[in-house]
Length: 264
Image 1 (cartoon, one colour):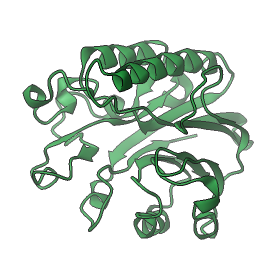
Image 2 (cartoon, rainbow, N blue to C red):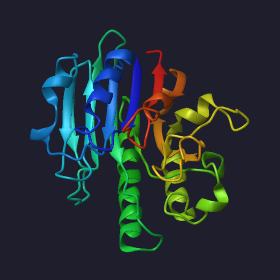
Image 3 (tube, rainbow, N blue to C red):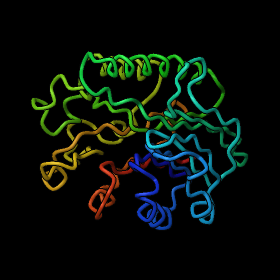
Image 4 (cartoon, rainbow, N blue to C red):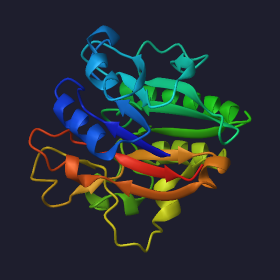
């Protein structure tokens, strides 16, 4: 089973890129972020024609998350339970895998950027991460496989940043958000990329490049998009790949997809 996460940075602006990619790579499950549209405006017909079932949590102009699945989606949850957040930043659903005798719960998450360290939006980011961590600890108690993918807006380590000195103390690398990310990992979730690509690997790990300063051409990026796996999902992990080609396209999203291949 191929599972991918991608911040499309406007599903309508990137629709042609999305459709071509779905046809070419045919992922079984796609976790999308930053839709920038309400559910009624989501291109459900075009994507549905490719064989995908949809779970959408949209928001006008900003945010928005979705799950695309070739298998039926059940138990859809919009928003983090118990967290009074009006922004469309989290959605989860369950996929039954009867042939394997398993259920897989997947979630698409779009963590706030934070704007500036110690600003009001930064504290919103920390609060969001705290509630996300609490909810994921609950999900890890379920008798299900779990994959939580998305734009976390966190580069977990300096190895995930092209120029760590330049980004030191930023909202993407700040020690407080890195600590929050570690708390999620320590609850029992594994970073798919690092399971396959150890720190001494020379493969470029970046998933996001600024539109400015020719960042993509210079590979001046950060790894802020992640697929986190429960132990049972990590046991099935065969491959993790960053699909850089979509970032190279004209009028591309500033993010590119991350794939995990699970042998279920």
